[in-house]
Length: 429
Length: 128
Image 1: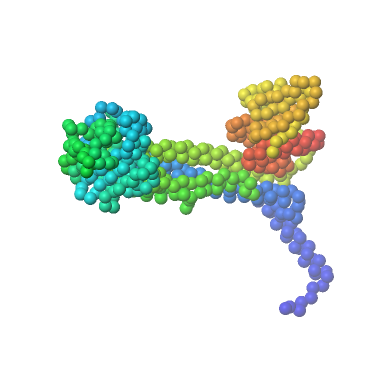
Image 2 (image 1 turned 90 degrees about the vertical axis):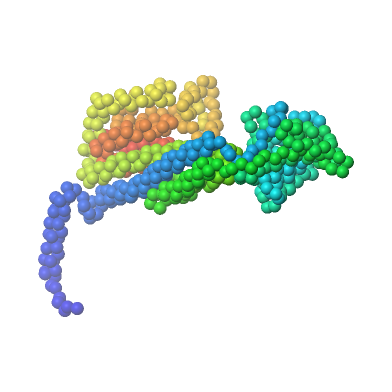
């Protein structure tokens, strides 16, 4: 520490010098910035009002950056949806090309004369059909679907039971109160069932193997239920071998369709389909911006003002193939049933994509409207803050009067009036 | 929560896009539920009555409040507040508050803020 002691005269001289320097600095600062008030010491009220306005403007500016990012995130998601929609459309075209190629695996179509509808019940189609019957479909030895079918079941129930060869439990309960579906081995027959446009049951093999269709009576001996079921499903002596029932054996009808071959074109279409599906997965992962991916389950909250009282929450979606409900190509597209199932899934996902695109589109327009509003507000606040320090009540009053006069002469008032004519205000005269 | 409003004979009120007039001889009580815009007669400014710059701001905020698409009035709104802020910078804090209400979609509160602005404008004009 120094031991220098300043006399009071020296001290006051020093203070005067410091003040002069401050004043000089202030003048220079005012000259440089063009503002009358630059520090709180000058005019505390004006200074703090101006600086709080500037702070608010800068708060809003900072928010604008976030809002801008949100718009980018939404745009990225929107573009992602567009790209995914293209992939889904391409996949649908691929599936349609596949279905144009004739299937070459073995298939059975009934030759029934009464057309079946999916909602028909068997006893509704034929009142005599009161008892149950068994249908056994075999594609190779020990790979068979055995369905004990109740007469009150519908055609759709039967088709579902044949196609659902992995999880019979629930489906079967709807078919028969006493019946079960017994599936040979670990899975059922390699066939897909459908109804043709003219109401015949169609079975398509998913492999090159032959298929055997057998309908047998539920009890020994011949009975009407059996004969009627056979007639409805379109098996008769022209396409099947009929064995009459005896006291010791069930009656049955059996037909075997020779082995076919796999259609390699369909196989390659199914490979293309699965590749497109993989691309959908990859695309949905890449649709993010700044770490937020609205197509991969992320959500976004856009805050519009600095205290967070105004915000918009945007829920993301999961638009990978499984989120959209697009499953892999079943059975290499060998059966039309599998291809049609894929087409149905693709159509449904197109609708989902379209409705989500419109929802994101609405969000973008809401966010952009707020963004523009905030941008304009910042400009106004900044011009207000800049002028505040030169404010003078008399001058402001005169300015407002002048403004009123000039507005009366301008078209602003006219256009406001005409806009209000389109408003409910027109009723209020 | 329902809003309860009492109308004097011949008094009018705007609810949504309709004007409702109490056409009876006695006072009428209304209970209003829902989120339609509601504007009572004392709060309504007709376009021919909007003379001063800040009354014009009130008119445009009122139109936003009553419109299904308030954003179409934004350009007009900014044109008007810009003029006022340039003419009288001390109005900035009023304008900031009312803009904030518009930004948060609270148009009714924005109208209240605009009323305060009109009052302040009157004071300033008396100085002129």
